[in-house]
Each structure stands twice: as structure tokens, then as C-alpha cells.
Length: 382
Image 1 (cartoon, rainbow, N blue to C red):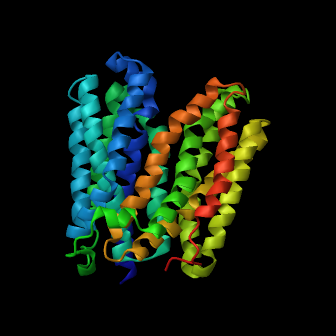
Image 2 (tube, one colour):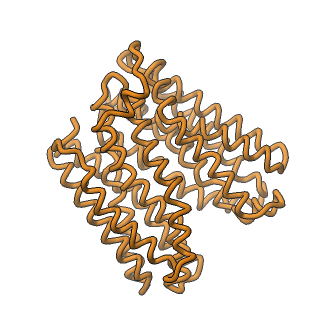
């Protein structure tokens, strides 16, 4: 495989990752404006994202089986098409019922995009570094949506979330179009039941590792701004800038950890363990919420730590089930998505208890350490 081929494959995977991540954050980026445009409460606007995320989680294994059956690149185009069509459909009118239905269907597209993107870079390059770069595109696109969608909102009003999502999906399709075709080994004739995937003990462990790293960091990212405002006395702008590091720094640590894994695969399990300890430490420091330099360092520590396990988890998942690598990736990601769906309201409840939400963050710090027990016993997954 030439460097040019690898670069085109990485670009196609990034295009899929950008579309998946963008749709998870685009509506929340202009929640107040969306609520005003639809004439509903913020709680209803929150359901627009919840509906997408439920379907995104439910479709992980089916999306993987589709990728295993017909090839990741082929099914990736279908996922991007779903994102475009549903985003354009949501533009028709400010109807909450229409938005809920379109966002639910968009979850099918984002699930396909994520699983297909991960499997595509694996099938073409097989590099943990490429897997890390793909992971960076997924987590980074959510941050980009938070920054860009509000800037174009004056032009499109509540439609900005959907216009930008359609544009990102089109760009992703162009990048994927320039990528190499699925290699023959990406097409599987043997049918592997979902039950065999879901009962694989190594995949369950890898799923828990992903839930600890990605899942917990997303939960912290969802609530850290509120914590810093209430307990740290920071303005919303400063709290948002500080809290965004819990997600944005994964853009750096995901590919860097993938590069480290490619060079030192036998040491990667230990590196993941240390990242859990760092995540616990950063979360514990966030409980203090002040002074500002401490909160800044804590958010940065969580963001960097959360990105370390990504290449380890997804390279390990596909290697564990060569008979159904994409379905294995989907199952692992489904566990993390389910942890976010369950944990988000529970962490929110912590803000109704005494302590300005600190108790929930303290529990998350303990969970980081508890998940050390989920690490696979083998030294490396290759």
C-alpha cells in the first residue's frame, strides 16, 4: 500500500467521522435559538439529540454487520446519504414532530458512518495510528460544531444545525469518493450472529474500557460547564472554554496513542491503565472547581487521558473477531453509547443534591479507577 493510498483512505475515514460527530453536537450548539424557533422548551430540544443518540446506539451492531457484508466504503456512502437526506428534510418546517423523526433517522446514518469509518481505515491501512486519526475526527467534529454552528446561526436561524450537517456530510462523501475501494478481505460471506458478538468476553471488556474513556469524558463534558459556573463561579464563556478541553484534547491524544501503540504494542495495556489513573485524578481535581488554573489543568488532564485507549480498543476489537470486525467495533461502541444514555441523567441528578454537582463528579472519579478491572488480561490485542 502506497502512502497516497493510505492518505486517501484516512481522508475518507475522517469524512465519515466528521459527519458522525457533527450530528451529535450541532443542535445543542444553538439550543436556545432552536427552542425559540420551534416554540418549545430546552427540554424538548434536548430530546432532538436524545432521539438521535438512542438510534445511534441501537444501530451499532447492525451497521457493523452491513459493513462486514458489503464493505465499509460502500455502506459509508449510504450512511452519509441518510445524514444528508434527513438534515434537508428537517429544514422543511419548524415542527417538533418532524425534527424528532428526522433526528431519529439521522441516528441510523451516524451509526453507519462511525462503524464504517473505523472499519474502512482498518481494512485499508490496518494501522493503529490511522485508527487514532479517525477517532480524533469523530471527537473533534463535535467541538467544531459547537464553535461553527453558532457563527452561521444569524444566516440560517434554527436551520443552521441542519444546513451545516448536510454540508459536512457532502464533504465527507467527496472525501470518501476519492478513497480507495474496499479490499476483498473487507467483504465477509460468513454470517456471524449478534449473540456471538455480544457474548465475547474480550469484546465486553473492551467495551467497558471504551465506556470508561469515551463515555465518562462525554458525561463530564456535558456537565463540567455547569459545575464550573456553580461551584467555581466562572462566567459561562470561561467555563465553556475550560470545559471544552475534556473533549477537544482527544484530537491530540487519540492519534498520538495510536502511534505509540504501533511502535510499542506490548506496552499499550499499561498506558491505558495509566490513562485511567490520570482521568480519575483530573476528575477529582474538577470537584474542587477552583481556582481557575487548577480547573484548567484538570480539564486538560481528563481530555488527554480519555483519548489514549481509542486505538487500543478498536484495533483490539477488530483483531478479536476477524470473522466480523465491523460488528465487533459496533458492539464495543454500543456499550459506550449506552453508558452515556444511562449516565447523563444520573449525573444531572447530582446537581439537585447538596454540593453543586460535586458528588456526581466524585462518583465518576471512582468509576475511572474501578474500570481498571475491565482491562483485558492480554498484554496487547494484536
